[in-house]
Image 1 (cartoon, rainbow, N blue to C red):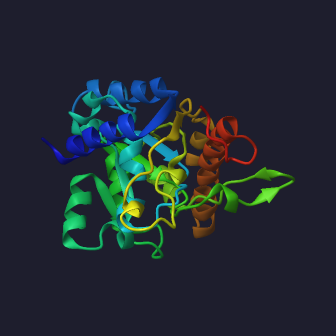
Image 2: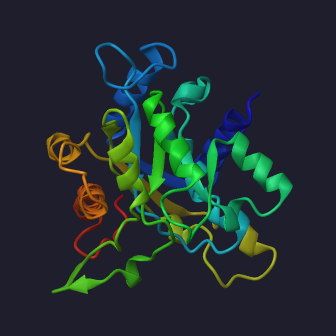
Length: 276
């Protein structure tokens, strides 16, 4: 049994026993994964009948405060998927993970690499090997998932204007990925809620290492983005560093608006409500 399949089955069992989960819009993701799964080998994304690649940006909100706990949101989220997607390496997501959280010793490093996590060093910018590999994965028709803020944020810390909360800015790495991918991928925004209550801070040993039962989690997939705005940005001039930076920022902003808009439709103007 592969490591991703083992982790998936463990997380699926956990979701079915310690909490309740509502999933909305899953057919959007399944349609994209089915295209990746049936359209052939490691080809390219969206040319003719070749396999499309997939990118799923989301916001990252959690109270999880230890190395093990911070690493729980991602695998638990994918416990909602049918197991068939974990029998094919091409329909298992790739994602970026912080070196100071997930790659802190040889055992953790080997575990997360086998789980298709790309080691990312925070603070050194968007030109680093993990982002290069993410671009290559999209160019070969794979699925890349981004926690686009690059760090943990809580709804009660979101900036507010006139009583409306806004997500913190997304990191430009996802903009670079879109700019440099050979063809734009299918982009499906995501919104997850309830994970911040699953393992709250402040509990004593050993309870701080155990999920708190009885919580309700929600995972929502939006419809695939209309790519016309991104396609226009793809052909914008890139003759100077300033033009490149501007286009990268604008492409990142497109994803930010998509995820924030989905979040507002699910969790209200304060981006804080967990739907039932």
